[in-house]
Image (cartoon, rainbow, N blue to C red; front, top):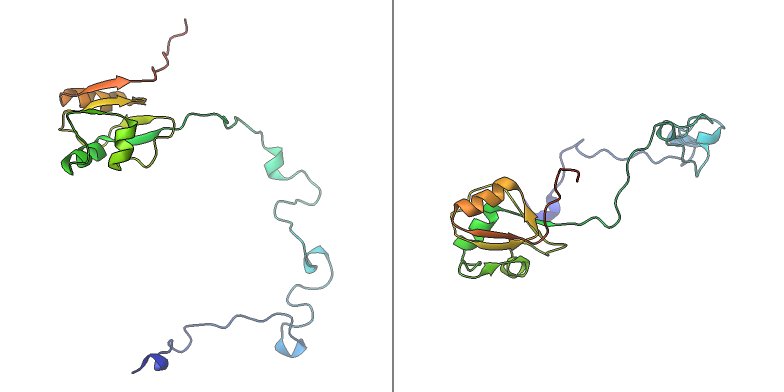
Length: 160
C-alpha cells in the first residue's frame, strides 16, 4: 500500500447537497426554501424575532453591571509556590513579591497584584509580599514558618 492508494471506507464521507443547481438535481429552483415569504429570501436574520411581539430577551429584567475599572489579580496556589521552590526557581532566603513570581515563571503577569489562594500544601518557609489572599492560604504560609505582608488591606465587613 502507498500513500496515493489511501482511501476512506466506502460511505464514510457523505457529499454535501449542492443546492440551487437546476431542477434536475432535486434541490433546484427554490433550493429547499419553499415558496415566497421572508425566509425564502437572502439576507434574512430572524434569530430572536417574534413576529412584532417584544422578544423574550428584551422582556426579561436586566440586573447588575460590569465594573469597568475592576481590579484583576493574578492568582497563585500554594502548590505552585511549592513546585517553584522545589525546582529552585524561587529563592526562599529573599522576599517573594509579584516581580519575583513573574521572573520565576510562576505567574505570567502581575496584573493589579498577586493573590495567594489555597490548593495544595506549602512546606517551604517563604516571606511573601502580596496584594491579598484567602484566609486558609495565608494561615498555611504562616504555619509553614513563613511571613505574609498584605499590601492591599481587606475591606472590613462592619459598617462604621
